Image 1 (cartoon, rainbow, N blue to C red):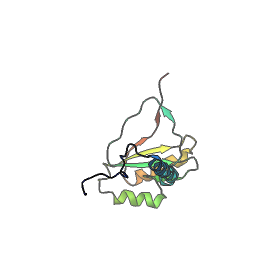
Image 2 (image 1 turned 30 degrees about the horizontal axis):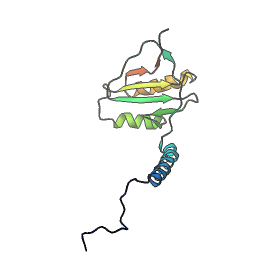
Image 3 (image 1 turned 180 degrees about the vertical axis):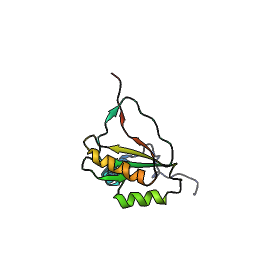
Image 4 (image 1 turned 30 degrees about the vertical axis):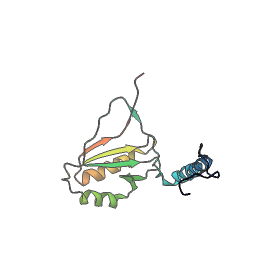
Length: 137
């Protein structure tokens, strides 16, 4: 008798979610452990504070100078030759290029002046000094 239900058949009245929770916890642990390796290291600088600052437009070269005097261009460590190559390879007119220079408050003044002099020598005359906005008291 094909249509009859036998005595061995039973109705499913609940679902055991324990295996699902176990799998999700293992995936969460794997995600948390691997997330620390995925994050790119940031260049640590401590910007000086100012009460007034402005936003910058496109065609901008981003310079960072840490307290050890190392210069970074667009997030990558760069020497003078790399900076000159980047400026010369840019498709924009050099008069349209802007540079934003962020230097650690403990960076040497000479390192900032050196980058400014290098930019001026390549025809980049528009620049801004990056500061952190100070909250009014």
